[in-house]
Image (tube, rainbow, N blue to C red; front, side):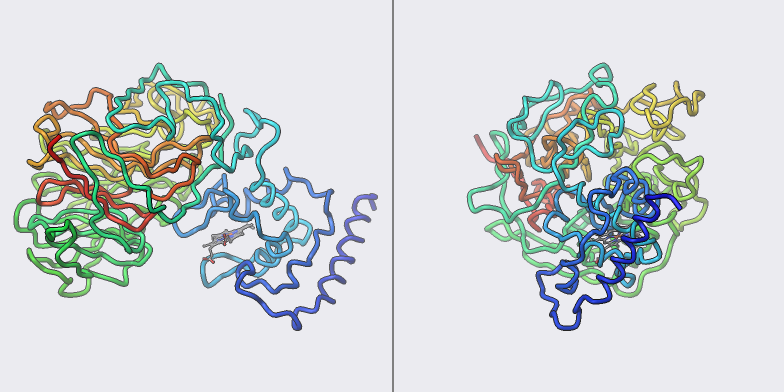
Length: 557
Ligand code: HEC
């Protein structure tokens, strides 16, 4: 028997004794405890302290946890992130207790079948995720880099890249393929926002000639918004499982009426009206795993009955938002289904089948096929360009390759087009985690129309067709940028404008339009998600950080 095995056995026995004699019963669980862990859990000590091997912890994490919590523990959908200091105040013993128990009724399995030493290794790994990184992790292991608070003393970004400190309404930007750095030029950051309540003096900032008012607040997780042909504004409160709507505008700029159109849904996001035109018969709604539709007549405030199930969507893990559009002739239905992972290979990962695609169906749900592929996640926003009739999408590209890779993008979508994920990105750049794969696709990768700041998390967008904004804005794209987690200094957290100069085509330029959701010290109070036009030609932006809907309106200068 090796010396280390003896040590391990001795430690296990010591541990078994500790746990046996802990007085669980006499200590009351308090609210402040992590997932109602008993107080005694805090006293559990890692018997292998110092000996725990972080690399081993990471391997175990990758095998047993990453499929749900993400390779960078960034979380997704219902699964919480384990980075950004969320576990910082949690005692190692509480974590050990929690992963041993799991919370199976909420989808968190027990890890009790892992040997204790391995559970402690995972705990050490998780605790280390919350700490600021000392040595640069560089190319060796980009997934280990952590910078948990915004580095406000960081040097300014290298243009054309930027960050929240330099976002400014009206500022024009353009990123081209030649601007991209090498992969791992900087470590992979873990810097998601800690959302704070909006301070009384914080308000979104618009360029000259526009102002921002609060249309509604107190909403639960407002996400995608879509305006019905009669002017009612439908929106998803995804976490609450509801589709709600607003109607009208009071003299002080609030909705005249609000109603719950449908509830009891499973994380609804996409909403659309069918057939296209002034008198739809159906409201389509997407859940992560399904397309549903409700019978509808203009003016309905409430669904008249239960939804019809139209189509199953592939798997539900990972990216969960599924925006939906119809071709202008009403013959086809498009649904964007994002990847299950950051960049796992669909050739060898069953869960990635028919993911990272825009799928096409008949509007009755039949005849599914892949319309365009290699699109990591366009689930946040699809739109039809009213000038050209083309399908456009807003895409979240991959993480972990460094601060300034890979640009998110907004682009028109070519039928049968390949956009790179996961083997390539933005043209013929091979993803360093997939060396040598799919050389035959190298020259097929379409370069998107508008490259955005990497990690911006570009979500819903709309083509402006109102008559309130000045004429030069006609047909321009307005998009919500939810904001980064994988960037050492945040970017996004803004509304952008993509000028199309009345041509229906983009030149690659975009402009910061509404900013101010991040305080100077890097704390975040708002995150734009949805984007639609109100009947009076103002723009409505939903914000799931402050639970509000903002209204952007033109004012005379
Ligand atoms: C099948 C998916 C799945 C797997 C696998 C999984 N988890 Fe979870 N985990 C969840 C879900 C869902 C929750 C949220 C549960 C809740 O709402 O309380 C969660 C919650 C947690 C939390 C609490 C986070 C917080 O801020 O409250 C921790 C810690 C955690 N998981 C660690 C792990 C570890 C470590 C592993 C691997 C040993 C793991 N999980 C494997 C789905 C999973």
